[in-house]
Amino acid sequence: MPLPTPPAKTLVVDLCRHLYAQGWASGTGGGVSIREGDRVYLAPSGVQKERLADADIFELDLDGAVLSAPADPTLTQSACKPLFYNAFRLRNAGAVLHSHSVNAVMATLCFGEVFQVTHLEMMKGIRGLGYHDRLTIPIIENTAFERDLEQSMAQAMVEFPDCPAVLVRRHGVYVWGRDWIEAKTQAECLDYLFDVAVRMKALGMDPSAAGLR
Image (cartoon, helix red, strand yellow):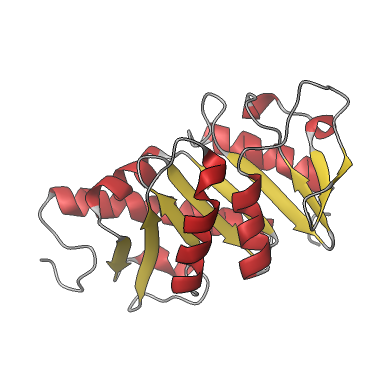
């Protein structure tokens, strides 16, 4: 029998710890948000992600209004909030993960306006894709403040309606899925693909081509 699904706040906490363990949320970077029905659960900003507790998670409505806040008055909503809501509104996402992965950052430095790969086995972990397909992820330019990425991220999502993520140059990646399982799966597969693509580039190989060169 499948294991029972933990409450949404617990899932946010668990996923934040997972991102930290992967090296994707060191310092106070990265973030997680989960949507269940008309409720959104959001990790706070500027905190050690591996030390969060359920009581530290914000509960919001679909318009972003706070329904339940942590008892600790020093905690504030994630700076990623408008970017997470892009995925909820434009993709009907059930979960969004924000990673500061080194592999994601390096991928943004090795590619131009889009990241592209094909004929790599881990592409099968991306919804709707197979080995012979081409994965395309838009890359947007970073800004001094996270909230200022909202419009450029939304524009990229409209221009690339099938993309499962948006890369941010010299910053990281936003990945979403229908639920937390798909978001986590795709984040892990994408990170693998970012790593392989950067290594291929270093060897003079084109990761967007089916052949060796």
